[in-house]
Length: 295
Ligand code: GUN
Image 1 (cartoon, protein in one colour):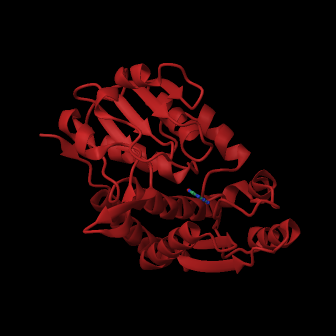
Image 2 (tube, rainbow, N blue to C red):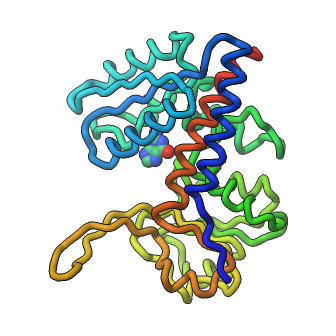
């Protein structure tokens, strides 16, 4: 029987542990971790994610600082806000929801966040630390989606060392940090992307396949080795026709109903990686709080 990796449940356990930890931190330090969430503009998907992140953070006892700038806000307006948040002692984590409007440079903005408050783990210093860190560095601020994927893999209690892992997609948010995390677990890691030749053949060699391309149902059953572990990072909204009505539905990058049949384990969409990303954001914020107390 294929294992359906229940991201919703794993994330719930993680949030419950964080809630208890935050209560203890409150007793010890008289304060709780603070997370600033910044959205610029009104991209619909971003609004959904931001709402889910702020709600989850409040539920575990994190103090939320919600900032919403108009889509006409300038890069300087945003940099000024980040400067204020960097100087605010009650703020331990800062998250700027991406994508940003075209007139704002994401890299300049990410570089301006105090690396110690980098709740996403996107600052170049944290990206560098991830690539050189030792195996068990509990203080690192690691990008939330790939870390969530790793935690899902770990619930399967299988040896990761020596496994062939293929990451589909080379984004800074998922593909690249995912490959670093798998390398730290001593997997043999390959990244494939839009210019890769024979992509299906390479995917089919994977013991662990991570799909993070943002293309609905791109990974078909004949791309996947029998008994492989498949983690689907894609969250794609597609239109479907039901009883003559057009509706929208969330699907992953993996053709779940086909691939499920011959994989050892697979994460669903929704209810897979999505909740893990949010739980890992709360974890990073708590780590940043603890790091600030140990400096
Ligand atoms: N946009 C899509 N995923 C993410 C994420 O993990 N963090 C931020 N800040 N923006 C995103």
